[in-house]
Image (tube, rainbow, N blue to C red; front, side):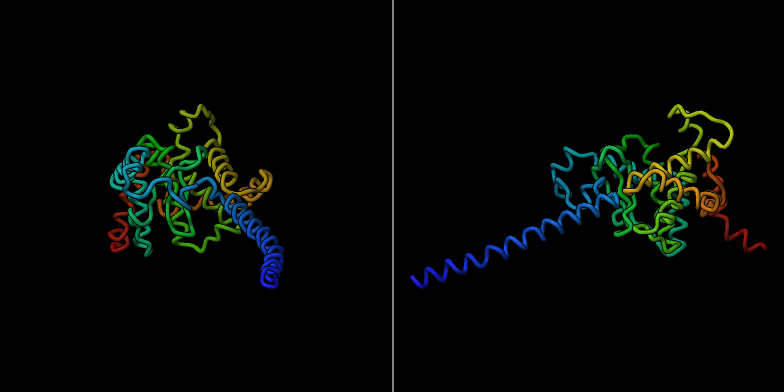
Length: 262
């Protein structure tokens, strides 16, 4: 009886401890989930775990990973935007490697890509990118974030001004707001339409990845807009179209020859 009593007493003593630990675990899990949602990680569920094992038959049959990787390679090889950014990052000591710094994943339906500063990796949303032109823009947009991450001490997670500045630059320099793209969205305008498009897309990107009010996002974008809009590195100009990007890439490739003749 004493032994049984001791066991009973022991089990009765463990009960309250388990009850105490369980809410703590639930609280920690809830805080972790909230943090992920606040930083936009909930839009990229495969950052934590993939539904299919890498290289598996399921991945080949039920995802667009192979197509995504082919389009990515084509963008890296042929897009003057991407080629200039890749060259600039290499010159800055941040060489980009396809297998290490890009990841094709399934994402939330509202996003096409993202830059994960924690892993220095660009996420390409394989379920949302189906055309080469779209892939080219997403790769360029995210490479601009990667370039900013390389050249400056960007505090992505707690400084909205830094995030807003990089989003403004990405919208301005990636071709997101080109005339052709705006026409395809049925957005028309003449006076300062490009600036309005850049501002709007930067706001949209911030609101997608941060739990912040629209008023707060607009205030921060307004504070940094002028300086960040006029920061054209590494293009040296706003590449409004592919032709502009080709000229910018040519100038970048010839920069050493130019400085040698000064």
